[in-house]
Length: 376
Image (cartoon, rainbow, N blue to C red):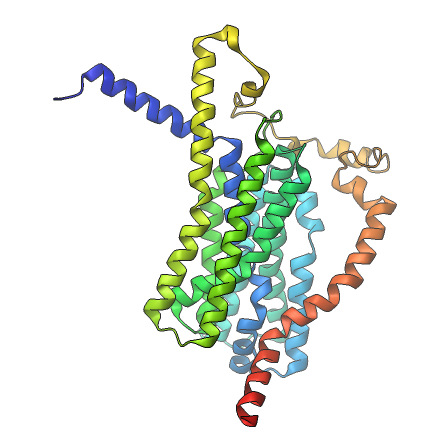
């Protein structure tokens, strides 16, 4: 029996209303941030394609180390994206990062595959510095926005987002094996276009919202952390199995498909949560007398002006007037703060050794494999 016209129209309106609610919600914004950061780990897998750069362009280890330095410089030079974030919306920051990514890594791919004449060393350093700097734009645009949208759960949010960045290298590796097989040059091509595609797809959802604390906010964030732990466990198992067994293209594709399913699985939890919030919102609209603070957080005007668009003159004017410790600082206030100076020095000396190990991990592993083959 056919559905009455009025009922069909009401169903269509309800579906449209919920779709708009979901796409403009805070939780979908969080999911979008996780997706963008999960693909922003090109600097962590430099060891996988550094050998291709070295062999294709005829570089020695000293030259490769120089290129690696500029890769680390670009990846950690986040002050540029931070200053830009102070005067333009997060979406524009992410868009700039995507453009830098596709330019830097695509030029490297063209050089490695011989599609352009062999570039000078300084040009390769510039390309990889630009490409790696896109990661700081993705980190700034997604992380700062997400933290501002969860002012009462900043620690959990930072842990969740940094976990996504940490897994991004392993995620990109599995997807590269699924798309191209074991081809280092194709990995550079994947890095040049795939993160850009993800960034532009989820770009509309990234914005700063005026929100209040939700009752089950912490529980939801912990659930997202559990999903991340499940993904990390699967990646660990697959990496071990792939080292022990020989995978063909179909098996790599299956592994990549499972990774994609696990990445998108938090969307089920988010949709379920937003359905409940959407129903509550509709009930409030029907019976205004039952309005309550926990539901008001969902009435977010899409045209709200983000805090990142504050006047640039006021940023410079208040640069030497930092607020009390623990309160929100602008980028310039943080730059001229002694606490930031201490953090900068500690991070510079503490992370340097780790970056050196990551950059050379591929060659170290290859060297050990040769030695073991020779000994046994």
